[in-house]
Length: 491
Image 1 (cartoon, one colour):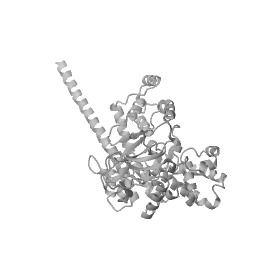
Image 2: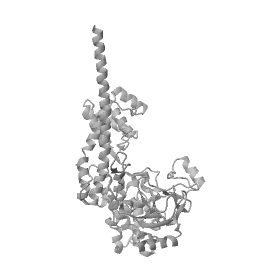
Image 3: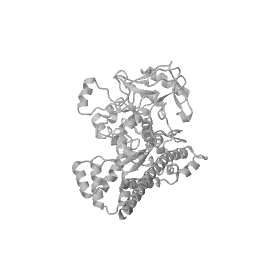
Image 4: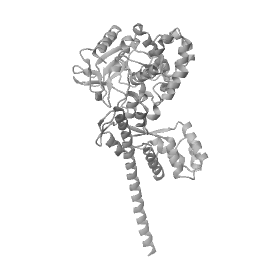
């Protein structure tokens, strides 16, 4: 963003009711490793200080844009534009097409027109992500299906709102662009409710407030992705629980200028009835960057959503992201269990898997950098290994086995992790050599992601082998004692 664009935006922001503490908050361009253009403390800022405020009416969502009402509320719902992010994407397209007559014309120029996220990578770059958690979450095909089946039909029904001469604003490329803007910059801003409405809604658990530090009885809106994130950037809200309202997703001018970095948050957005306020959550020294939060995400998610990775000192040395995770599909665990125990019948296994899923069991397990084995994974493996009578008892009680690891389950989990590690086309050692060479940014970021995942797998496998070795040692010692006892008894 140029200085001229920033000045124009600030003028627009103030004219529309926004306010910034200009004595405390400034803007500058930081190194790319620090997020690029961001906010800086102009003086020492104390905790609880209001940095800037944004009128709710200045946020851009399906609630604040006039398009849904012009389109017709019933027609909007019939076209399923109230589901997922397609409606907000269409609003953003339409507002852009209005040019200077749009209320958000002064804001649109601040939004990125280019993304380094894998959604826009070529096939060669995407192959560098093979085996990582990123690949299955891109959802390009699903996004384009949503564009074809929802957005295009809606546009064709209203040529008065979407004239043919403005077709360029509603292209597939622009759809991806707007979706990526939402993915990388939106916040979850719930509709304000009075205390009476809030108490009434809490009775049936339909009102969920975002977590945040209490400031003047206000709760903090979160980055929109912090509460659910397993699909493409255009359709993931559709996959969330019914109680999540897709109209809560909003673009928030000014707030989205703040960068974020792992465990660096020092400011957060909080809501009141008529405005949102960015408030410092800890003291900030003059010259320091003002950081918002993405939720301390792993590099796989940072790359997928924002197109960058974090490289920070790791506890055991080297650089990486302490928040990295590795995801393991349940079908791998099922397959390895059957391989190690061929006596398990396919019908029995399928029955147990179906029951596991019906009872809300996970189909993906997350292994974190603390190297603790996921309890649901242990529980599923033990469920598959139950004798028939034990299985019937567990099913009758509606409870899977406790996540207590034993030799059999540990052996299976070891092979599950080993199989997951083999899904990468390269080894960790090969990555360490390649990442230090002359490579493109996309390739480097992809390698950093897979190295973080592989470190967790390798370190967990080492931990499992140490546990197995200790168990075998105890068995050998026990066997030696028994043998001696037998010899003495024969005397």
